[in-house]
Image (cartoon, rainbow, N blue to C red; front, side, top):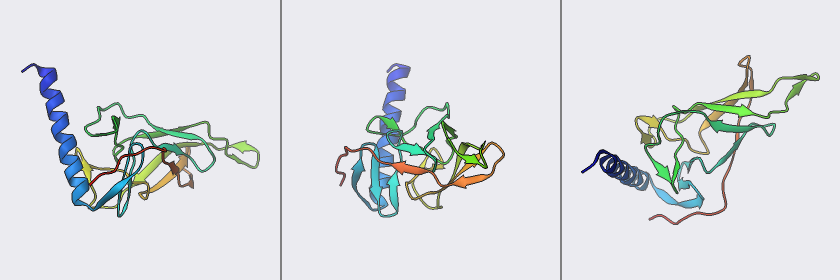
Length: 149
């Protein structure tokens, strides 16, 4: 078997293990494209739209390959680095935009390569460049989904 085929087979196996782990953690159904719903929250993939509380767009900037995908898109984990662009936040007329998002998922959840998978209910905070807390991010789901279980 060629190396590319072996990697693809390993990825498929990891995805199956992830799906089983999610099923074991009381998966109910998908509520949106790239999002699997569990009793404790919805797993966030790259299909979700993440914004700061002021409307700036948050996106993962990690360069690592995705170990697990939902609807073909990577599942976000606590080890991903999120940058915010386009935040219009002002304090006394001076720009103080959100620049990063930091997530603090609860322990005991689903792990992807040893890092906690992010849920829409995971604790998170947007920060300015000076590391001033600016409020929690907004996670918006996509419209389509599939039923699991």
